[in-house]
Each structure stands twice: as C-alpha cells, then as structure tokens.
Length: 366
Ligand SMILES: *Cc1c(COP(=O)(O)O)cnc(C)c1O
Image 1 (tube, protein in one colour):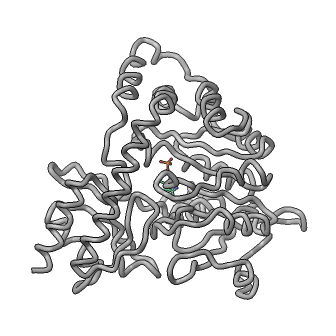
Image 2 (cartoon, rainbow, N blue to C red):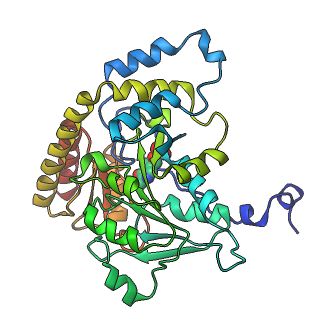
Image 3 (spheres, protein in one colour):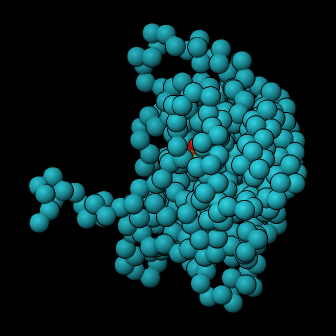
C-alpha cells in the first residue's frame, strides 16, 4: 500500500528519475572544474548594469517576451525578433520543445511521438522525455564520438527519421567533439520532425550551425548565456528558428518566464562582446596547454571544441580518480554511463586552475 501522500502523485512522477546535478559545493578553496562554468566573471559593464537595476523597480513584472533582448539578438544573428524565444536558461526551452512538438501517446498516423538523441550527450534529454511520458530513442555515437553518417544510420535501422524531436548536442557534451555544419545539415534535412541543435558550448568551437535554423524550417538552434557568457546564475538561454515554431513555443511558456535581472544582464552582455571573446581565446589556449600536460602524465585526452575536456586517466579507474582529486580540493565530473565511465570530464578553468590540476595529478601518480 502506498502511503497517503504518495497516492496523490501520478505514477509517472512517482517513478521518475530526475536530472542529476553537478555538485555545487560550499567548501572554501575548492577548485571547481565539474560543471563547465566560465572561470572568469561577467564583464564589469554587466555587473554595473545588474547593480543599477536593483532598486524599487523590482516590484514590477519584467518584459513578458524579453523584447529588448530579442531585438538585440536578432541584430547579432541577422534575423528577426520573431525568430527568437528567450527562456529561463536553455533548459526551459528544451522542455518547452518537448511539450510543443512531441505527442506522448501518438494515436494517429500523423501525430508524431519519440524524443531522439545520440548517446552520450546532454543527460537532461531522457529526463525531459520521461517527464512528458514520451517514447525515447537513444542511438550511440561512433566510438570516437563523431556523428554516424546517414548511410550508417539507415543501415543500423535504429535511428528514427520520423522522430518528432531530435536533440543534437553540438559540440558534443561530455566528449567535446565538434561537428561540421555540413554533416549536421545532411542529418537535419533527412529528419521529418524537429531537430534542436544544442549549441551550449559553440563559442569554443570552430564552426556554428546557426544558419541552418534560418534556412531549414524544422531546425532550432539553442544557445545560452550560461557557459560562455558567465551567467549561469541568471538563467538566460534562447532558441532561434522558424517563426511558426518559435510562436508555438511562446504560446506554451509561462507569462513572465525570464526574470528581469537576467534580461538586463543579457542585454549588457551583448554590449560588451569583445570582453568575452578575449576570454574565449584564453580558455581555448588553456585547453590546449592542459591537454598537452595531462597527455605527458599518461592521460588519453580527446580533442575538444568546448570549455571542457574528456580524458581517460592512467593507473586508477576514473571512478577512483574523482575522489582522489576531490581530496586534493579539485572537483571534476565522472559519469557512470556506458562509453564514458572510463573518463573524467574536466572543465577548463583559468591557467592557474589548470596548473593546480596538473600538480594534483602528478602528486597522485607519485
Ligand atoms: C549547460 C547546458 C545547457 C543548459 O544551459 P542553461 O541555459 O543554463 O539552462 C543546455 N545544453 C547543454 C548541452 C548544456 O551543457
């Protein structure tokens, strides 16, 4: 017998496995390389704009459609404001896409079900499908985390070209593998449902696929201010795509889904892009240094186009390395998932943080 409160909860919710967060520790002096946050603070102009906005106006509702921000984003990306929806982080928009485009229980020939994604990729996608009660289709990437080609997907018979919604993390997380726009385009053109290209880490990559969202009606590109623009705390992300898909998402979002200080911070960020671009260069340079140094100590480091690296450690299992590094006050991420459980995912921090990691690694190996 279920206890009384439990019986009020839908079976789907009772049995749900929620998303597993990276640890957000309060321990002083810990070097945090586990959740791919930017090691550099937001620009001084952004901090000043947020501080200046904290006054009696906090009593007012924010702009319901993030109008000012969408206008600035439209200029930046060469599209119109009605090609853009802003969310409370891109996570909110990934959830809205699941609700807007996927039938949980398809009951006709035209209604499409199924949320589809490659494994490994962003571990939120299966949770979103489960919350919605939708079918999932997981298809493995190649062993080196590259995308299978169309011919291979057809041959494998596992890939669903009719899936209502396909999520592609590009560059991939947790591997950091970058994808060429021309391979993404082939995949998108072959899909009969919506494709979300999740570009959370694209500022650290060689190519972006934004033009596909403005060219193909079934493609949405997801971007976020969290990682590259040092605004995880503020929760601002956006989708770009065909105005009809964007309008459908606007219909089902909360009325005031993006908080006012987040809108202020994001607008100020767009006014100071050179500050951020200079830091992307530093992070990319540190990524190369860290990869070389870890390779010297016996790690197998995969090529990365993001602000983290996936690396297979020597001597001990990755699951043992994680607590050993933590004891040395360095936090990295280990995923107990097929294909990546022999690896550590390490966020590229500042040059000093990367040097501290390499010192800790050498200490553990001695
Ligand atoms: C961090 C992350 C997101 C979510 O970003 P928010 O805008 O902070 O919600 C989306 N996709 C991927 C792949 C991420 O790593």
